[in-house]
Amino acid sequence: MEINFNKIKRVLIYVFLLAFTFIQIFPFYWLITFSFKSNTEIFDSNNLMGLPKVWRLENYSKALMGGNILHYLLNSVLYAVLTVVIATLLSAMAAYAINRMYWKAKGIVAVIFSLGIMIPVQATLLPLFQGLDMMGVRRGYLGLLLPYITFAMPMSVMILGGFFKSLPREIEEAACIDGCNIFSMFFRIIFPMIKPGIATACIFTFLNTWNELLFANTFVDSAEYKTLPVGIMSFVGEHSTNWGIIGAGMVIATLPTVVIYLMLSKQVQESFTVGAVKG
Image 1 (cartoon, rainbow, N blue to C red):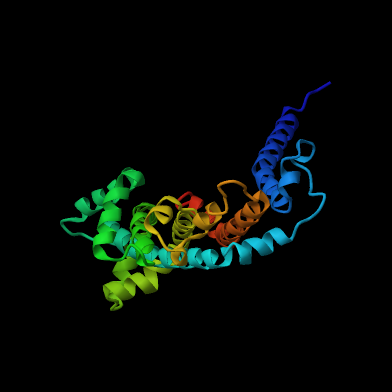
Image 2 (cartoon, rainbow, N blue to C red):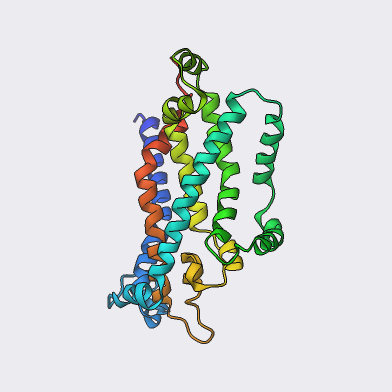
């Protein structure tokens, strides 16, 4: 009997992929079922991973209204959107200047952005706190926006730099012959050509901003400016905690990241194949 090794190999690959998919999806399934349960059912050892016996929709209403989660959600959306737009635009211009233009200090500037990736965020906490406090912006929206934009730029510059390097210089030469100045050439010709890189940088920036807790918990004193992760953390009580409401808040916090990735996943997949095939 002849053994078909290719078929066996294919079956093993499918089994591995199915197991990997289950491992990735199961935490999200558990979180959703967790968010509809009461404390008693959550800690019931006979139904740790099963569906809720009673679906408690009030966990979501209490999280959104009673827990002020809706306000924290809007704050997180504001921080994330402004950070993504401003940091991506500034990073694209900086990456273009570093990788496509000739000027004396571009090597030093590239090193500075590289240091922004290598220096731990925790090491900058105290200097940032003191600096923002001296500037008088720590207690407002700028107290988080400025650090978020600053720390998002190094990674975005590195991501976009690889895309700028892959573009042929003949594009810019043709644009200059047609009379384009530097800004018109960048925004009308170069910028649209790196859409996969822009999408990748946007996703990284959004995820880092949306899930950030250290700065938001340290710099913000007023509940008016708190973000969603800090708001969810405030649900933990000193003597008792309603874990179902916390689960509902975590589902609400997770959904925007899933939606953003689904919207931009095609661009991200294209970013992995840029330069792989050359004509």
